[in-house]
Image 1 (cartoon, rainbow over the protein chains, first blue to last red):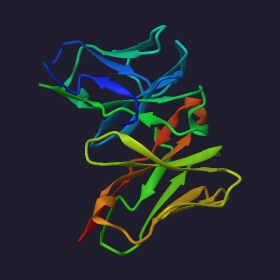
Image 2: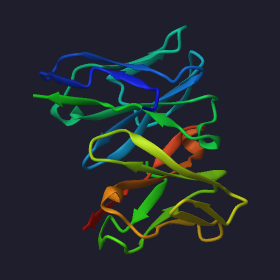
Image 3: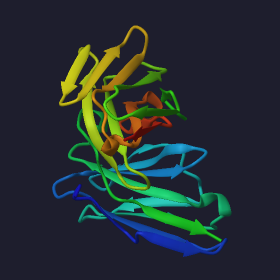
Length: 115
Length: 112
């Protein structure tokens, strides 16, 4: 158990809809990272939050947004969903804002299926 | 954009054999990490090697880093069926700042 909790585990929704994925980092970790994993694109970095503030941005679509709350849990909001958004969405956490200097702990992911 | 590229994309070996996976990256790095992912599950950290290190060991794992060639390799010795998984290298990327950027991974299949 990595200590990172993601909910829900599975999500099936229709095109055009909006969903919210939730991530609780390991106790004491201040940074949360969101990744999208699909068969053709591999593991794509979306966005990082550190202690409530956006820290780094990757290949995140404008239809996607995220935030980190005072209790350090994070939510990833996906709107106007398209079939191509179907993927595994992972969150990871690290103690500091510099992910590469320490190991990152990953949740088990949310599998999103858009139909 | 991908920072690291693993090679080969897929590798099939017999139990007891060694497995070698390579990772090449594009820009200067501070550190490089290797992760493992069992099918459809979360990634698990294996080892971190710093830019001033050339080799590191952890159990049956051996990682090398050649910063002049911008490449790293992961060697798993005496493979077991339980080593069947995807393996990813991860580096930082200047454009993304502090985040880990992953390659597309090597899928290792170990048959008994």
